[in-house]
Image 1 (tube, rainbow, N blue to C red):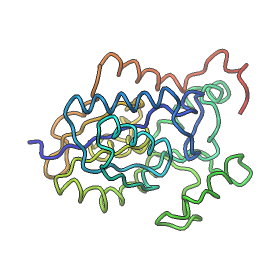
Image 2 (image 1 turned 90 degrees about the vertical axis):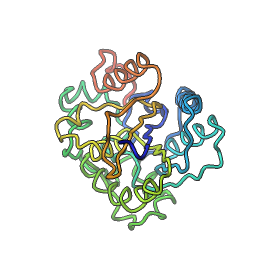
Image 3 (image 1 turned 180 degrees about the horizontal axis):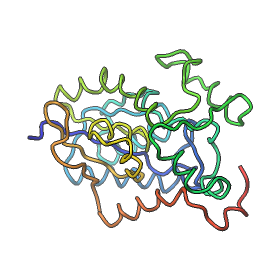
Image 4 (image 1 turned 135 degrees about the horizontal axis):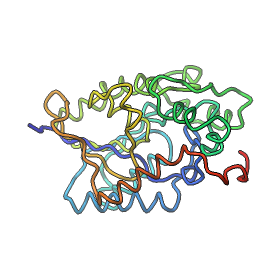
Length: 264
C-alpha cells in the first residue's frame, strides 16, 4: 500500500539544452521555454491538488529557478527550499560546453550514447586548461559544500553521481519523507535518473534507456520501506510527454548540418 508520495522533477529547459551542449556544472539559467515548462508544471500540480511540504534542489540556478516557478504557480511560495551540491547535475568533465550533435559526428553516436547513458563510464576529467574550469571552481557556492573544494568531482559517471547523492538522500531527504512530508526534488536529468535507479532497483544496463523530459513531474508512490508500490507516473498530457522524451533522446544524434554550426 502507498504510504508516501515523492515527486522528482528535471528542471525546465536550460539555455544550453536548446543549443544541445553539455551544460553540467556551468551555471546556466532557464531558457524562455524552460520558464514556461516550470510554470506549466506548477499549474498542473495545483490542478491535481498536490501540496508540498519541502523542496530540495541542487545549487545550480536552473534547478532553483524551476522550484521557485513551480511553487509560485502553485501559490506555495512559502514552502521551504533546501539546496545541496549533492543534487547537482552529473559532472561531464572535459565534455562540458561541447555540442552533442557535433560530438556524434566526430566520435560516432555510439560513443556519445555511451558517455551520456552508460552507468559506470566516466568521461575525461576537466582540467585547468578547460575554458569553464575557473568559472566553476572559483564560484563562491562551491566553498559552502560539505567537502573541500579540492575533493569535488572533476568528472563523473552516473554511478559516481549516485555515490555522492545517496548519503544526502539517506541523511537528509529520507527522514523528511518518513515524517509524512510530501517532498519535491527539483534537480537534473542525471541526479533524478540516479535516484530512480536506486529506488526502483533498475539494472546498470536498463538505466541507459530511462529518459526524463524537462519540466515533467514524476510521481513515485512508496511503501513504508520507501520501495515503489506501482510504476512511476509522468504526470500530464501523455502524447506531449512522449514527444518530449523523443526530443531528449535525439540530442545525442548526429545532425547533418552540425558541421556547419559554430564550434564551441
